[in-house]
Length: 416
Image 1 (cartoon, one colour):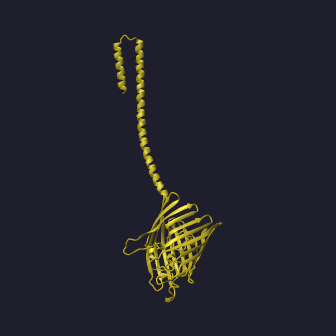
Image 2 (image 1 turned 90 degrees about the vertical axis):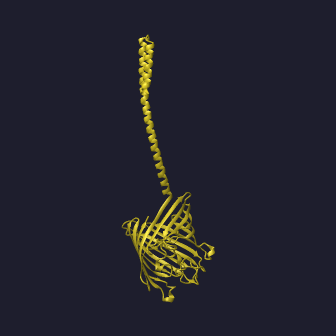
């Protein structure tokens, strides 16, 4: 471009010089000076043009980089938003178990329990939860016994619910959800830890007081003729006393089962029955409490609960008391515990009570010794020993009284 301009200008000058040889010397010198200035200007324009082209190339490259960065930011934002909306938790447990029942051969078995729980957080303070667990349809156990030729094992719907935080201290939930009732040290006198109520519940709590309402369908389909809606109300207080904590609760639960047949597997789990139906309703009044203090820089918890069914005239009470020392919260931490339980045949609905103690259900008494040791924050070992349990004090009277029942677990538990 520069050469073309200069050649054109030079040709013009030469032609002009030939045609006007009579031009004075002063004008000719002025014309050459103008030509030199024009050539210098063309050089400057060429340099500026090169700079503009280089800047354009850089701008295009920077724009491509910016677009790439924006895409990465958008993708990361989408991933972050998903992780902020959805939480996953769960656990896996491997168990070795021995069972020794009077009059029967000693039994050994290996069992697993696996659970996963997904919670999605929606607008307006709503959580929607979905959980699956190993095992069959047992309402109080997610254990799966290993064997049967290594057959595939069952997975069940363990949780399916929504939970709405109406206000900071008030919630409402419905579906199949985790038990919201207070249980001192998660004991199973009334409710096994694997029980998932089906229906709805509402709760309120503040710094010192709490209240929970529970509505549960034992059977919601009226065509079965066995439909029963149960409800319960529990209230209590939880206070801090210096380095100690105290919690106490009072609850009433109404399960109208009288005249209904078994709800699961044809069994009554220690409860009185006649001609294949329940004899009593289970209108249960419960008092429970727990006191925790520090002993040798470790938590010591002393707890207990008492229950009475208001419908029958006898075999209507149950209680459990115990203590725990220590807590497994990380590597090298440990816990020891002792409990004693005496649960009469019609004190609680056996279908939903502890599935391990004295063979499960009601109509049993005895000791329970346990311990745990932390390997890491998410892995610990446990043992549980049911010592000198007596099963069937009422229901086996015609066979000479209760049976000796001992049971021993070794568990390894992983949480995530």
